[in-house]
Length: 237
Image 1 (cartoon, rainbow, N blue to C red):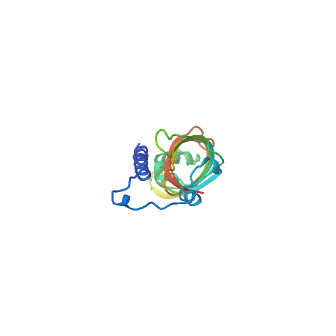
Image 2 (tube, one colour):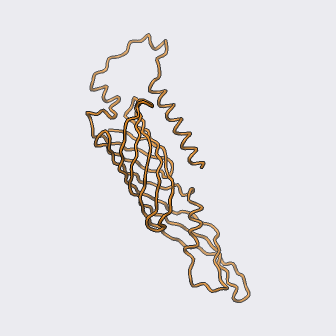
Image 3 (tube, rainbow, N blue to C red):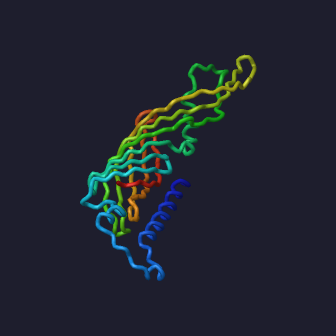
């Protein structure tokens, strides 16, 4: 819930800040200066974003949230785009899930007098890769430079977990509580569905975006679902 609230607050801040920058009026002092003339070619360099006659475009940047990723996007035309994100998942948001996964790794060779108890765990590595096919449309009635988009794709995840535990053996009327640890690698994949918006009304070729994703595990834990998302910025060229 905290993560969702943070996304909402950041999204409102981005929209207000970007809209203010794009529509800022000149002060009385600055209005006394003459405005330099800018040629057509130079004007396009200053703000070349998403002109209908100039597709295709590409964008590369980053995304903060779950996950933290490098974000690439290809815009072949006005309505369709293809995105690839690669980076590191926010492992802290999955602590409860990884804690519960501990029981699935317990050996089935223990007798009734033996037990293994969970102590702690840490994600040594938690990487992901996803591709998405998106449909987008203008939302300039809401704000100039705003586009909404929705789509679907596929996500691959590879997580390496290290668990600490205690081993108890009461077969000799002793409860030693010996410490131990083991490492497990979880590789999985599944479909991902996404909705978001992209804002590009800047004086530089930049595009800011906010998106929410819904991931469904199709391999290691079929049916497991998780909301993900983040905010990001891309350089468009």
